[in-house]
Each structure stands twice: as structure tokens, then as C-alpha cells.
Image (cartoon, rainbow, N blue to C red):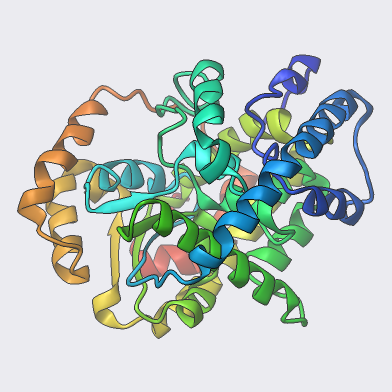
Amino acid sequence: MNIKYSFKNHLNLVTHTALGMSLPVWITFLAKNKFAIDLRALPKVLFMTGNIVTNSPFQLYEALKYNKRINRIKVERPVFIIGHPRSGTTYLQYVLSKDPNFCFCTTNEALIPNAFLSIGGFTRRILKMAMPATRPQDNVKSGADKPKEEEFAIGSMCNVSMVHGYYFPKNIYKIFNESVVFESDSEKEVNTWKKHLDFFVKKITYKYKGKRILLKSPANTGRVKEILELYPDACFIHIHRNPYDVYQSTEKLYEKILPLLGFQQVENEFMKDFIITSYEKLYKKYLVDKLLIPANQLVEMSYIDFVSSPLEQLEKAYSQLKLGDFEKAKPYLKEEIKDVENYQKNSYLGIDELTKKRINDKWSFFFDVYGYQKNS
């Protein structure tokens, strides 16, 4: 891992994923992290503070106008795509989102979750001009209307979200434990997260006139039990990938996004340790929680199977989860699959022997459960 920081990383002001926070969440968020902001990030934080203050009247207006209507919405059989970051969740989401029977959270809605019903048209135009054609961590298409993890929206609505660990990475262990695997003795974090996820899901469902919602957040891999408490009829599509590939790709992810999103710097070894530890915790909780999912509400697939035969894997998912008429959806799905045929994957230099030994040891249970071969 080689995280490189430079002043230009603090110039991505218009597209920072925390710009849509509510003012109370922003203040609480900074205080909770003890305002431990690196000096070079201070101009970005000041700009964001001004932007959040400016947005507050629109957020208040939206809450007064729409909240009662949103709270009356009934959510039925939401679909959650889960899996560790860099396991293929985004590709799967992009393909499924082409089915016109689904609604999903767009980048624009994820960045301004408290005001997209009011000023979403305006911010969408800004994002269309400001956003790059591809994401910084890989070559995947980006854009205001592309699907986005609802985790970023939740991070702007409350103080229980994994994305806060990207902003204050020195606290990433604590944030992960409190917001993903819920290790805290208090039910406060669980209830806060549930409340805001449910409201956001209802809000998206309201905007798209009751369509079945498709959600994707790798952090939800550790929240299956809590999701089922909210939505007993929820469906899950779990995609998994060779652990060595996931490790290397996750390193690349943090190399790219931490300098862009973070308000402080963190050491390479610290993040390498976090990848090992968080993966182990995430999947140990998932393997326990998944026993709670009824058989007709869970499909699991490997990344290699999905990439090799996407339509075959999706047909199985449509059948088992009753996602709708697969034959009608197929032309839309094929459109996205064809669009990424020439996608260029990131290349990796390999894993050092010490890290490989740690992966083989700490993630051994995952190799066994999903049948991946260990490299000696």
C-alpha cells in the first residue's frame, strides 16, 4: 500500500461526499472526532461548513414539505446487494439497475439526501459538469445519475455510517465497530442507523412512485440481522471474490479515496492492518447472520462466475428471489453487460509474504466456506 497525500487532493470541493450533511450532523460529527483536522484540510472543511450552512434552509423546507408523506410509504421486498468492497458489488448493481422495474439511489441523491426532492435538479447539473467520467479508484463509469451506495447518504443524515471512517481514518476502527458490526453495548447506534436507513429507503421509494428498491452497500454485509429486523421480507444477493484479489483491490481503493475524502492523514501499515481485521469481523458476523435469512431470500454467487456468465447467474437470482420477469428484463441487463465488455481492470504487483501469511491465517474460515484455494 502506498497512500500519497498532496494539497491538490483538497481541491475536490464540489464533489466531496459529505457536502450534503445536515448542519446538526456536521457539528456532531466534527465534535465526535475531536476536530482532529490536518492543517492542509482546513480550507476544505471551512468551505464545506459554509456550503452546509447555505443548504440548511433547503433541507428544512424539504423536511417540512415531504416528511409526513415519506413516512407513510410502505417498503416491500427491498433487494440488498452485499459483499466486501472490491468483490464486484458495483458491477452487479450497475447491471441490475438497468431493469426498469427497480429504483435505486443515484450519486446525486446520495450526495444531497436531505434536499434532493427540492434542489436535486440544480445539484444534478453541477455534478454532471464537475464529476470525472470514471471513479478515482478504478475505471468504472461515474456520473450524477449512476447508482451510488446509500451508505454515503446515511453518512450525511446521521452519525452512524462507515463513510465517516474515510473522513477521519485514524478513527476507522471505532467507526467500523460502531456502525457496521455494531460491537457497542448500547442499542443507540443500531436504532439510529435503522431509523435513517428506513427513512432514506422510503424517500427514494416515494420519489420513484413505489418501485422496488435496489440497494448496494458493502457495509450491509455486516448488518444482515439488523436489516431483517427492519424488513423481514428483504432479499439479499451476496457476491464474493478471491480473497487475495479483494485484499489488493481494497488497498488500491484506500490509496485513492483517503487522500480525496479524508480530513487527516493515516499511515499505510495502519490501513493494511484495518483491511485484515475488518474483513475478518465483517464475514464472521455475516456467516452467523445469514442463517437468519430464509432460503428464498438469499442468492450467493462468486465474482468469477458472474463475470464469466452474468446472464446465467442473474436468471438464477431472478427465479429464486422472484425479482420479476427475467425475459423482459434481459435486454436491459444485456445493454449494461455489453457496455463494460472492454472494461480495463486495475493491475496489481502482488502481495508480500508476510501479508499473505496473515490473510491465510485470519481469513482461513472464508477460504474454507467458499472453497477458495490458499497460496502458500
